[in-house]
Amino acid sequence: MQELSPGFPAVFFTCAVCADGSARLLSLTDNCEAVLGVKPGELLDTYSSCESVIFSGDLENFKSTIADALQNKSPWSWIGRIQVKNTIRWIEIRTGLPAPLDELQYQGFILDITERKWQEEERLKKNEALFTKLFNTVPLAVVMLDVNGKVLLVNRGFNEMFGYELIELRGKNLNDFIVPEKLQNEGIDLNNLIASNNLISVETTRKHKSGRLVDVILYGVPVTLDDKAIGIYGVYVDISERKKIEEELKTRNTELDNFVYKVSHDLRAPLSSILGLINLSKLPGNTDDLRTYFQVIEKKVHDLDHFISDVLSHSKNLKMVVSISKIDLKSIIAKTFADLSYLPGANEVELTTRVSEQEFYSDPWRISEIFRNLISNAIKYRQPQTAKAMVHVAVEITPAEATIVFADNGIGISEEDQDKIFDMFYRATERSDGSGIGLYIVKNAVEKLGGKIAVSSKVGFGTTFTIKLPNARADQGAGSFFQFANKKS
Image 1 (cartoon, rainbow, N blue to C red):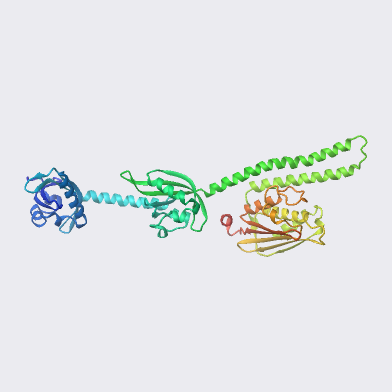
Image 2: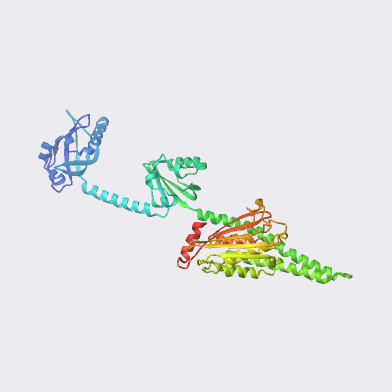
């Protein structure tokens, strides 16, 4: 072959090939040493058989390429590695059509693409590093599956959202772990849809390792190569908080409808009674004692005032920010009981308390509202035939929480009513002449403080309320209080 400048980037060659894909070098241009690092004669003498120079890991692919070209009587090209003098180089070979001589011969050229490959590998490493960084730090749950729904990768966000580590899931069907039983068919259908090269976005429910259900938006993205799906990306956005807010909003809207109706009724009823009594007093010839009318009017005015106070308390509880300070529970209980002494029968009720000495921090106004409503109910619904109406309040305080047990020996609450007593405007007894939102206010105040309330009662024997509230100690700070409250809720 003709001489070429040592600086020319390609080595031209002639080779003979066999049907099995083996090949033998016949000639090389003089710039071989400059391009490939070996003299033409040395390469022809020592490495004339291509099998002796092709890197072992690439040999099968090399022979397959030649065999296919021979079968089709076509040119061929190949990219792979050669190993000469313990040095591995990446090369690219391109040929023309075969010459039909005694043995099939190809002419072509060889390019050294080692540097290009190194650059590609460096770019690939950087891209992989960037992908890994993004995959693991994106604040979403991301999983990569094969087309059969088997787990290949999960990120840190996935572990935080669902509780599973990659080692628990790799090679396993994801649906078996995070899809609730009743949504298994949905999980299969979504996988098939994405594997068929479709993007999906759907609101659904998935399951944490603990069994807790998580409301999510699932984005499914097919991973494709040459327009064929080779995998699936699943991206999960936790919308539990949004769903909770939506449910609360729905509840609030229902309550608002009831509230407007009930308020209008409970405001007009006493006013109508008062107006009726005034009209009666004006009738000619009416000899009734007007003091009787005044007593009834006074009661209606008090009822109206109490109802308006409860409505304002409810509104304040909803809107007012929780304000934490040290609380003297003994004083609050005693003051609340004294403030309610005007209620009929209050002097017939004996109050006893037992409060532990540990410091307690919470919202003073809401704590007062809780006790005001509970003590008020205990006075109103005492048993007339009981020799002594009793109310006992026991409070156990720890650094973490306060447990308040409020017990009376009043008329009690039937079992079927106990699930409803915290509903707005629910009255469990015909004796009730209150607003019907007292216990509703109690429950909402307890929940605002991050606590829980439970009731146990038996008709004729009294009622016990058990309240657990976080102790928002000063050294914890407000952040710790709300973290505690969120864990409790």
